[in-house]
Amino acid sequence: GIESRSFPALASKGAFSRADIARILRLAHRDHVTVIPEIEMPGHLAAFLAQHPGMELKPAAVVGSSTSQQYLTDKLDITNPKALVAMRRILDEYLPMFPGPYWDMGVDEVLPPAEYPAFPQLATFATAQYGPGATPADALHGFINWVDQIVRAHHKTLRIWSDQMGGTGVVPVNPDVVAEWWTSASPLGDSVTVAPSTLLSRGYQVLNAGWYPNYYTDDLGPVAGRADLAGVYKSWTVNQFDGQELKNGTVTSRQKVPANSPGLLGTTLNIWGPLKESTEQTAAGIEPHLAVLAQKAWDSPLPAATYHGFVRDTHRVGLPH
Image (cartoon, rainbow, N blue to C red; front, side):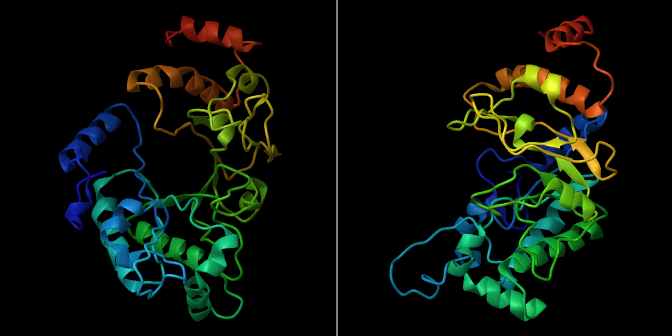
């Protein structure tokens, strides 16, 4: 985390100081790197809510309970005006610190539709704000659009993960928001996510951040944490959106969009930890992944017929072994 003037107690031990961030930004500028900050909201906010439990989204079963029952989510109560004031303070503090064109608010894994009934305040709020037919998804989309207005006021573009963009009744997410598509199904978000082709048809810019082949992490049960690069080099294209690669080599949920889609922004490599390796090992480990993804994202003629030949060529031009 980064030290905060708005909420001084929020920063954990070892948090970055403002001077640290300034040094990182100078280094990034020197090396032509764009730093894209992300503060997850309204989900994945457990650290903040541990200090501000009154802003936490609680299920109806424990709201107003006089018992000692404790319930902790990592979700902000977006129906609480005090929570919105707090988020605005945080955004207005941190947005000016970063000169880049983007701000990321996450929005992944907030709430699956099956859990909406446990939080009836969301439906009540949505109906009051947006009229009959509004759903809890509309309440969430309205919150995204509210943050988008703040981000736009700071002359930046908002980016979000795509797994809570579905289920809308009356409030779509603003079309100027960039969607980072990462999965076709999310047990902690939309059970079936909006397809990349649908997002593009609705006017969104879409970043291909699908689990396969764009993740570098440890294996999760049957799911491979790192893609087989020979297979990526041979057959994957940047307009192909995939869910997961299983350790048996099966790739799930292949969805292709036209290669010339104007809203397709390209791809990215996501390092998801904690990893069972050192920082130095991770830096060395991502080198070949970055090389392959860069080559495939450019969509230029392959420099070698096979991945083995590609590796040989990258060594010739000076990339690490």
